[in-house]
Image (cartoon, rainbow, N blue to C red):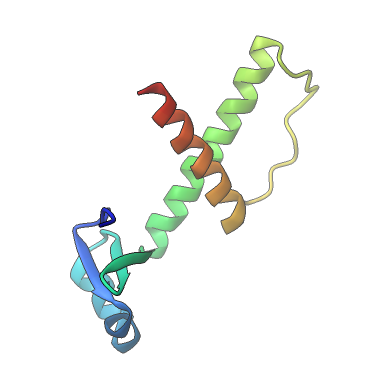
Length: 104
């Protein structure tokens, strides 16, 4: 059985019926969306998602700063920053989680 990483959960059918009600009931917490009792997605309010992207972007900036200060990479200046798209965010989040897991 997979771990559900949220205090709230709902089926895909419930999500289709009234997604706004799910978000309201969760009061800002993520909602695990289940398919056959397995989490397939997490529904989060827009402000939570935006904050997650900002944290990931901060992480990326910190990585660049560490690389520059350690001399690993010679970058004359910071690259022009563009907002993260969902794919980049997922990739960076996977990297952060893997590094965190390796430190344990």
